[in-house]
Image 1 (tube, rainbow, N blue to C red):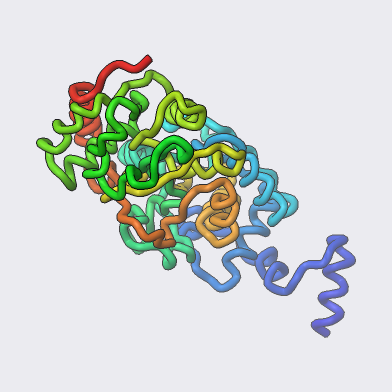
Image 2 (cartoon, rainbow, N blue to C red; image 1 turned 180 degrees about the vertical axis):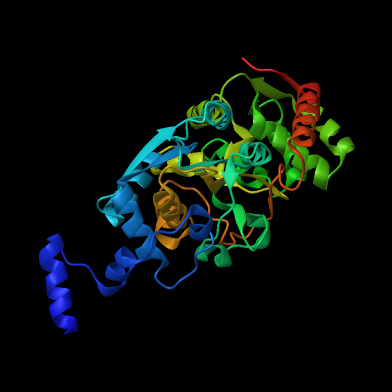
Length: 354
């Protein structure tokens, strides 16, 4: 009898549906409140069936370069019939956009991925809905933003690490620093540069945290040049030899440059300032099944593998260095004030670059 029911189901829909998918389709539709807490063994089948019915999921993301396109392609290949409309936007612009949509009661976005500072602002503005994911169990507690009833506002889907990048053809091995003390090596004097941007400010914050303000002020003798360019552009100067090294370069940018033949290397310092991007869902997602299916995919092994292809790190893995998230566990206002303090100190110890 079960075999005949299976055959009839195939004939009726024109494709093979496995028993758990059949059960998911037959299930009474759940409310969004029920969906975000659902933890049944057929969770993926339930979400996929619902997402196919919804047809698409709208995703706002801050992922850079081609990585968000690669993620969209991989997700659609994993879940045929679910279109992922991905929109790449900066975290601050994303926040403004979501606030405007919420004010107008135009609920467009389903899921978001952006930096933790922006997610905190979204949470405080009631733009996010806490949810459950079975993949949260694979992440340390500080990689999840806890809510109530065992739910979380987001989980850290990707990490970017800020450390010391240098031209390996021009800097002698003995002068490559193993920690912040190594930045005082004579060979580095007058030959380091930093970008006037958040990564460099966070390096100052890391130095203050581990070495103190007196050490930071000692670095003035090294005549570090300030460049009004973004970190990837500074890395290009390092690759060309115009700048020898910088303590404020992302690991993923460096690995990408290495893959293209650039003569650069990257090493961690005492602690590694870490930028993170969290996977969250909107408070009123028009396609709730798709929103949760995407969040699960981002946090699961397959989504993490896609991000690692683009040289992002995973919060679920240990990499042998001490990570530090400057914006974790503090209010948005306090974090902004800390950034201002670090920026001021950086400018005090540096000189204007070319």
